Image (tube, rainbow, N blue to C red):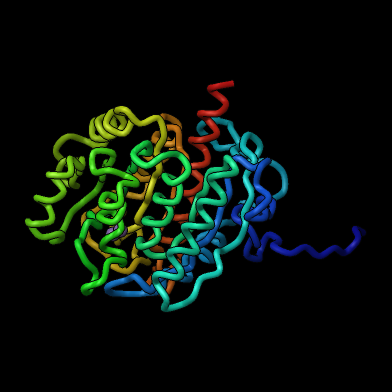
Length: 324
Ligand code: MN
Ligand code: MN
C-alpha cells in the first residue's frame, strides 16, 4: 500500500501554472529565459467579449502532466529542460479601464524584458499587443524588432469607436508610435471584409507585408512563410510573434470574439509557429483572442492556444540546442 498524498494541479485538475512549470516573480527573472504571463483583458473588443478568461483556459488546455520530461515527438527536445521557463501569473488589471490596464501591461512587459527574459503573454483581446510588442521594443529598441502577426484581421484601424485603443487598432498604434515601423510588419492569414480600402492604402504606404489567405491558397503556405521569414529577418535581428487565434478557421477555433470563416488549419498554425520560433530570434510573443465562453465542445480553441504556446517554446528550444 502506498502513502496517500495530495498535490495541487494534479493530473485531473487544472495546472496552476502553464504546463506545470515553476512559478516565478515579476521582479526576480534574471535566471529565467522565458516568463509566461496572463493579461486577462477583454474591454477592447468590438463584438463578443470573454477573452479575460483566456489565460485561465489556455493554462488548463493541457493533460500532459508536469512531472518529468515532455519531449516533443518530432524533435525529442523538451523545451522545459532546455529553457528556463516560469509562469508569473496574470497582470493585475482594472476591468473596464483600458488606458490604466494597458499602461500596467506595458510596465510589466518592460520589467520582464529588461531582465533579459522573453515574455510570452496569454491574452486577452488583441488590444494588448500594443503594450506587449511596444513594451518589448522599448527595451530592445524601437524599430529593431520585427512583428510577425497571425490574424484574420489587419488590426490597423485608425480608431476604435472614436478612441485610440481597442482590439482593431494595436498595429496602427505600434506603427504610429515608432515602436514597430510598418516595414517591420509581416501579417499572415488576412481575409474577410475588413479593413476598408482607405486603411489598406495606408497599410501599403507603411510598407507592411500582408499575406492574405488567398495568397496562401494560391502559392502554398510554405513559400509564403519563406517570404515572411526573409522580410522579418531583413535588417531586424529580433522578432515578436503575435497570434490572434482567429487566424485559424472557426471550425477549429470557434472560441473567439470575431470569427471569420476560411482560415488556417490548426496543424498549419502549429507547424508554422515552431518553424518561425526556430528561425527567428524571438524576444516576445502573445497568443490572443481566446474567448472560452464561445468555445466548442472539448475546449478545442483553448487547447489549440495551449499548443500554440508550446510550439513557440519548442521552436525556441530547438534554436537554443542548435546554437550550443
Ligand atoms: Mn487581432
Ligand atoms: Mn482577428
